[in-house]
Amino acid sequence: MKATFYTHFTFTVFFTLAGSIALAQAPAKPVVKHIEKYKPPVVQSYLGNITGKTASADVEIAKVVIALPLKIVDDKKNNYAVVSYQFAYKRIGITEDEETGKTSPQSDIVSNQFTESPLPAIWQSNITEGLHKGESLYFFDIIVLDKLGRRFFAPELKITVQ
Image (cartoon, rainbow, N blue to C red; front, side, top):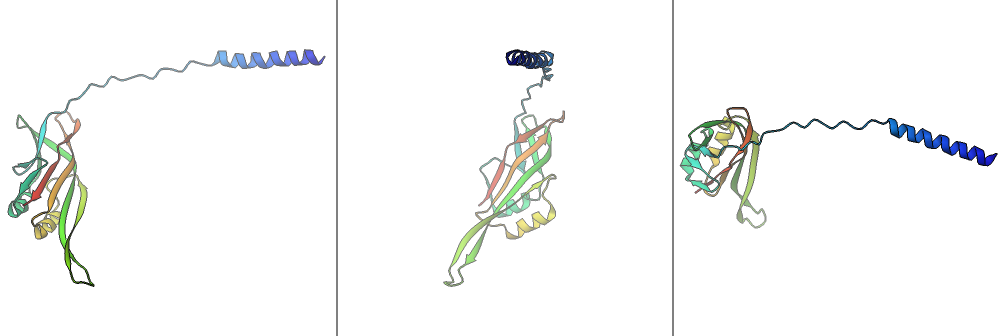
C-alpha cells in the first residue's frame, strides 16, 4: 500500500510540475528600435577670438573676454546653440602663517554649471576684480544643439592668464 501511495504521489507531483512548465509562455522578444548613428560636426569653442585647450591671454584681454558669450562654430561658420556648460576659475591668493609671518601663494577653484552665456554679472565682476597672472578660466562639459535638436559635446576651452 505504501509503495502504491508513493508511486501515485510521485506521478501526481511530476505531472503537476510538467504541466506548469508546458503551459508557461515563451517570453516576448523586445522590439529593438534602430537608432541612426550620429556623427557630430567638428566644432571649435570660442570666447571672443580665443580658442583651444592651451590658450593664453593677458590680464586686460581676459577681463574683456570674460564678459563675452561662449560661441561654438564649425568650419563652415555655422553657430550652434549652447545648452549648458561648466565653468571653473582657478584663482591664486596669498596666505600668511600667523606664527612666522611668512606669506605663501595658494590656489583654489570656484566652479558652477551654467545654462546661459555669457557668465552672470556677479561672476564677471568677481573675476575681473581679482584677475591676475597665473590664474586660469576653464570652460568644460559644453553641451550644444545642432539644427535638428541633437545634443553633443563641444571641445573644452582653457585660458591661462599671462
